[in-house]
Image (tube, rainbow, N blue to C red; front, side, top):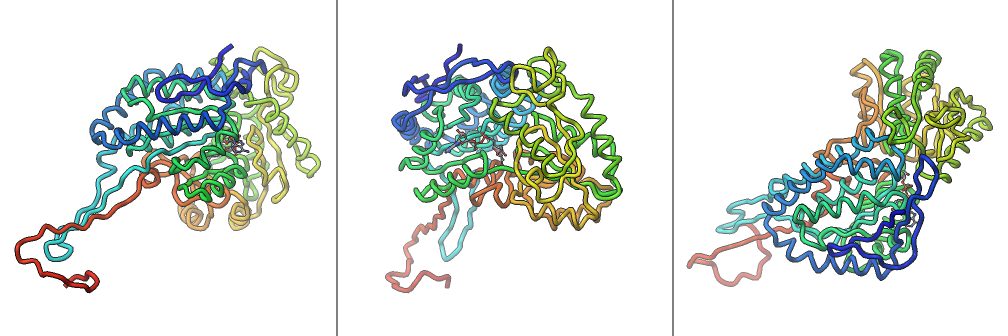
Length: 501
Ligand code: NAD
């Protein structure tokens, strides 16, 4: 049985004796325990980060970049090990876990360009013999609080940039799949990052609350569900911190009648059921504009029935289990809600066979196969609530306008996609839709590392999105310096406000 600890000041630390269980979602068995930090454990991590900060801030940009390059190489070399840790605790299949490591690595690669990213501006001669320049400086100790669904990639949206900018970082990963964070810590150390610049506190609300209140934590990045994102934003802001808090999602794919329906069906199934639908950018609702509904549903069902469900470490598996038993039960409960609401369950994931087991509902482990619900009514619970599992809803709409109205009426604004061959419609969509990340014939439009990731409305609280240049802005603050080097002919005392003569 493994025992996952904290990583503070470059060492594994036991901390408070309270622990929580870690499960193997494919079997339902307990595979280990994870430490649950007390406020004192968080204080120790923040103190280690605060002690490491001044020297790291003063480390040259080029040396910081060297450490990042080495970290990138080490992480790439250990990608299979990282993916195996993720699969064992999250349940996602190995290839999908490798994909998340690859997307995280892209942020590290972006952060390797920090000498360029932190270039300021310089204006010579803004007034007589006066020059002005802008610089960006790190904040100090910054924290990241992350969800279970991307235990490697989401922390990597944050810490490569935070650390490259010269901050010291405290990560509080999800207690459901905490092991990836310790491999990252080990690799940072091997890459030559000074101890204390990257720390991990394992835990739950106790750790989160202490990070939100701690006077030495200057900024908090959060990714998770909307109620907790709102809480983190409000509490962190009330304690004077800079906060970006990314929340939940309910992403729609709008299918216009001129779209290529085979492409649409492939995309809907890939984006709906990859990672068992436990992605904040998963497509969970297909809005089929008349008259394509029946044909599209038939194409989706054909594909769903061919999917192979099984343990994440089985190379034949295309979709793994859900993360925990309670989460599986919650997701499965929506099948009953769908029936109560008058929708039609056309593929029932409880019946899906699991490799090496029986049907999903009777196999040990947290199984639910891909589920398709047709004729979901706009505004019904199945339509609007974040289910965060392998349940794809089909909503029939009469027109493009009706589809846009349905999307814009939603609480969330994370991602959305339009499938069409009509460039004018696509262009109108990107303009009219109230969502932060848009795909045009792309079902999971996750921005590249050099753009920024974030939704609108209840999908993000705060001003800045994650990574890209907005990430650099989040983890630094600006200064403007105005300098004058006098020559002997300076003009003497002048009590007037400085203006340019
Ligand atoms: P969660 O909100 O339950 O947990 C996220 C983090 O908050 C974890 O570290 C957890 O320990 C902590 N936490 C949980 N309850 C808390 C509480 N009461 N007080 C303080 N901290 C608390 O989210 P999850 O179930 O781990 O992840 C799934 C959610 O994350 C989904 O809603 C998904 O849409 C969202 N998500 C969003 C994005 C995005 O970019 N917008 C990305 C990934 C996941």
